[in-house]
Amino acid sequence: TIDGAGAPPTGSLTINETGTSTFTLAGTNTAYTIGAVTFSSPSGTFNAGSASITASGLTIDGGGAFTNTSGTLILNGAMNITNGTFNGGTNSITVNSNPLTIGATGIFNSTSGTLTIVSDSFTNTAGGTFNANNGTVIFTGSNATIDIGTTQTLNHLTVNKTSGYTQTIASGDTLVINGTLTLTDGAISTGTVDAKGPVNVGTGFDAGSAALKFTASSN
Image (cartoon, rainbow, N blue to C red; front, side):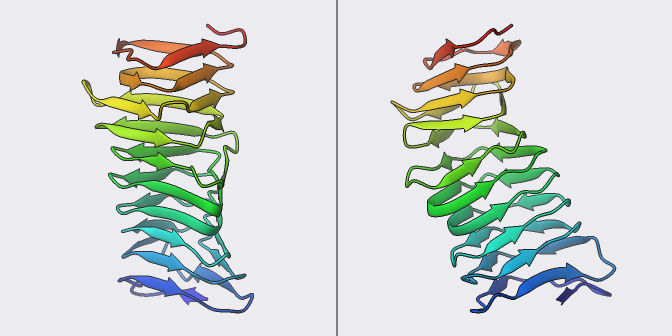
């Protein structure tokens, strides 16, 4: 147990326990602002519970599982799920101006709430797993790229870039949107967006060079 009673822990946090231990945030504090978190345990579990965490990055590289049950998670550094499982829980997750990368043996079970990626890349090219979990992915901010190794399925997707900026999908890649596609502002270049549900286009959206397919009834 990482006890947050009294003054909450600060600084970077690295866990590389080789057993099957579960590490749980506990105590009376419900919000933590910490440095970079590295979870290298090969078979253990980190349970954030209902705590809200702001960290300067998150790396899961040992094969264990990081579970963010119901608190918010804000990352002001890179999010690297190279080997292991990230369970996003039910609340909002924000990756600010840094990349989100899923490695070959990484599993990203997204939040059922909103995953917001601000001004940086989303990469899943090595064969890792992204499960949408009925949530919403939002791309905001300035120019950024999506590189997904051919095809990636999302539930709801919102593109709401700062006006004049572009979300680029790597050439030959396709985003499949099973839920609602909302195009609010900015543009999408190259690649393909395959909309299988409703499509909402705002007056501020600048289109772009990406192909937009409709493979089911859409509005």
